[in-house]
Length: 267
View 1 (cartoon, rainbow, N blue to C red):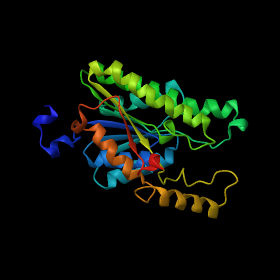
View 2: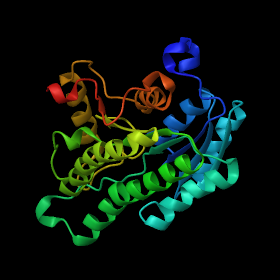
View 3: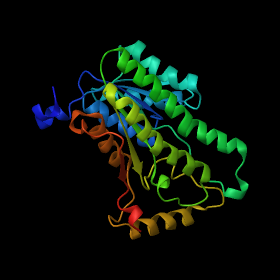
């Protein structure tokens, strides 16, 4: 049924769908998994943190949702493919893939090592591609389409500094999203990205080297004060957008990057 023939409630109903969310043990990935489950999807939470992913999946089940966890090293092609294969083996299909797993070690350009560069690009970009490839194959082999959602960053548009490796990876995510959307659109697989701004997560509140808590707090307060909406974001701000991109409500949207930043790029 086309979205135009659905009620608004039907447009946002993911009942019977299977979603895979990578990097779902905490933060944005956890928030997205929670909202997808609330919309009716069966969710596989994938993370290298086995205990965290299991706890997050258990919390969804306690609220009446359907979820489970899996461990995978998403920085490798084999690990990325395995994450998708686990969903198909466990639930028989995959309809939604959210490529959220990523790292952002802050390192100045002149101190950046090959090891940090490779580790960042492998997880943020290479693994994302091979997970997307595997998901698209599974969707088309089963005779249906689906939605792939890539988590990019406003750093793909406006770098904040000391993150050349991260910026390169997220710039790649934006262009890869367009490329995949063009190639997979005829197969009824939509591919979009979300570019979060400053989102408060366990990862972003960890202290960069050389920054003391008072300095970090002051930086966050100054940023929030300068932003049009006067606050930093929360994982649920990204999660609600992800649900829209996963649902029939966005069936004519592909190849786009949705900026969810509270106006951060305006300052």
